[in-house]
Length: 253
Figure 1: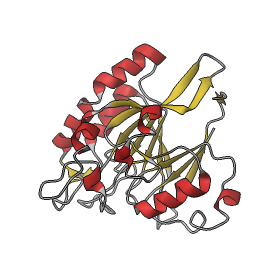
Figure 2: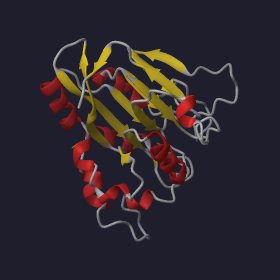
Figure 3: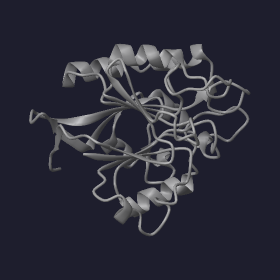
Figure 4: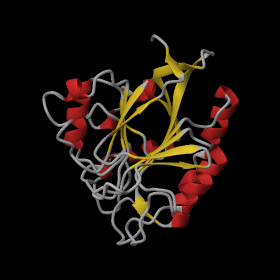
């Protein structure tokens, strides 16, 4: 299974007519925030693969369509969108909350990705388990910014769905998709780019195989893109990064 992860920058290798040639055999696309929605549109149109996104702390023009924002004409569906914490993608395919982008919003939800189901180690067919979390640490009271306690509360609300995952599939989560980083894992010391301590707790408790994040721009090639944290592979998706999961055998739909 090949997963294309993108965040924070319009990548010229993707935003061109040869994108599929540049990135062949992609099965799934994960967008980790701070991307214009017309870029996400392009990705969906060109690759024609299941695509999931969360919001970061920039490029929030359409954030109001997915969350209630005081003082704006938020979508009437925003409340049900944010209160639905355990959704399978075959429901969301026809969900008008997607605002006609073709990509599915994963923010603050546990998703069972039946469109990319697989057999793990040749065992029973199972959906890929994805949990998405939007936003960054609060630094200037902007949209989609949260204090440590606010973010921890949002994570706690996801626990019932994670427990159901464990009962049904024997694991809580395969991939955690976020914009921000865990504390002291790929983060920076400035107020905007500090990681969430509650992400560290979440990883230790629910043990995702991968955590995909954005937010940290890799202008310095010496900065780490991939790290291990308590058994989870933490990957910075800045611009683009491809994950190849070799021990998973895809099943036919």
